[in-house]
Amino acid sequence: MATPAPASATNCKVILAGSIAKALLAEVAEGLSKLTEKPKLVGFLANGDPAGKMYADWSAKTSRENGFEFDLRVISKEEIEEAVLAANSDSTVNGIIVYYPIFSRTSGQDSYVKELVDLSKDVEGLTHKYVFNMYQNIRYLDAPTNNVKSILPCTPLAVVKVLEYLQIYNSILPYGNRLFGKTITVINRSEVVGRPLAALLANDGAKVHSIDLDGIQVFTRGEGIKKKHHEVHDPPEGFELQDCLAASDVVISGVPSASYKVDPSLLRDGCVCINFSSEKNFDGPAVKEKASIYVPAIGKVTIAVLLRNLLRLVQNQKATAEAAAA
Image (cartoon, rainbow, N blue to C red; front, side, top):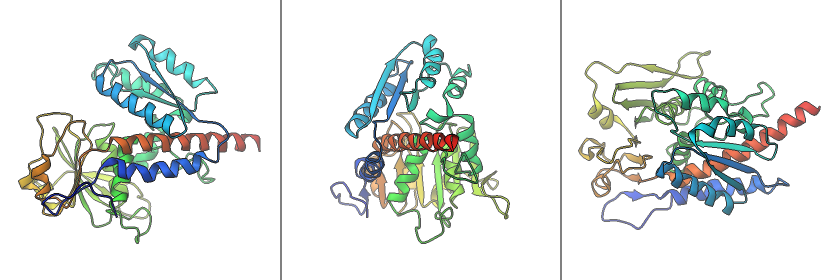
């Protein structure tokens, strides 16, 4: 079972991201041992954002400690397009990560930059093909051969790995149905994290309440033989946040605001609470009075997933080259 932080006076176990990341990094180390060269990840920082710089520094440190090369390139907004295209054509580069946001949210330019990254080097899984596969619950790029795996976005996948580590996923059930019977609330519906996360959880069988400023959406797995990916519904009339929280086995929050806090009085007794925001969306002492497990941050898990994705890209590159040579 999970390794807790020092025990408190409550029955809540606080699980730290480092404990969860260790298992993923061990998996990465095993795959890395089968390679003859160190994979190289290039990061582009073009926004001057302190949070982006912190994430880049963590990425660099963890990459190098675990046998990968990491090259951070700090550039201007005006240089980002040509820099990405140059990395695409550089045979020594295995993976590319761009730290967003770069441009204003209303300009649409960040979406354009995401599409510039070559599919074979997109370590974050943000290009259209990967996004399409994720929402359609398609796990490979080369079906029916199934040698080239699709890449999932790092933070949503990190949350999935946290839930697997906590044994919220029921390993007795068939793969793809291991969240059957679970109700989960995700507070955040951004296109980068919240919406993809809700889709991934629903594809694995959960009923997901997706919360944002625009209201509530309900994600469920599609019904019928041909429907193998999630569906999105409106909630029952009058259904509010408090109703979502009261019904949820797991509450996951990622609101990027220092002032936002989940009201602990609305939480179901014994629920699991996970924070993926850079801010603290849960008040630690208060949430421990209601939750059975509390994960206050997942940053180290996200970086471990980043390296796992990079390793997968290298394996995909090898499989693609072998198929072309056959």
